[in-house]
Length: 96
Image (cartoon, rainbow, N blue to C red; front, top):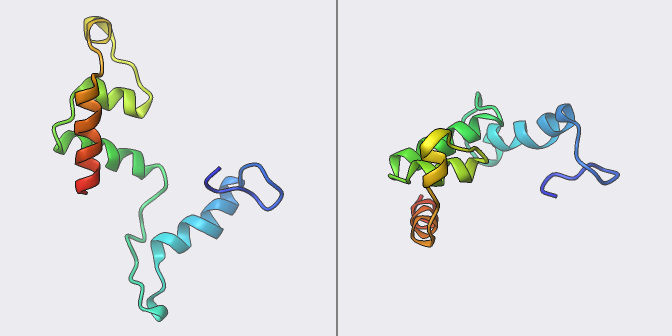
């Protein structure tokens, strides 16, 4: 678990936002850590990640699989993620 609650399990959304997310994106200007982007929301990370995959030329089937989606129609039936696609995706994210 990435963000466990005080008694195990997951944190409630309000606790996570107040205790983990807001301090992480707001930085600590007094301590010399600038804000990352004070207005970004947790769910925005999925949008950013998808955008990076598009910018890096990752095939649509690999993008969908990475985000837990399925492609519809013929594309979903006849498209498969190959080891080369996975490696391309990993290499692109490592460069970032």
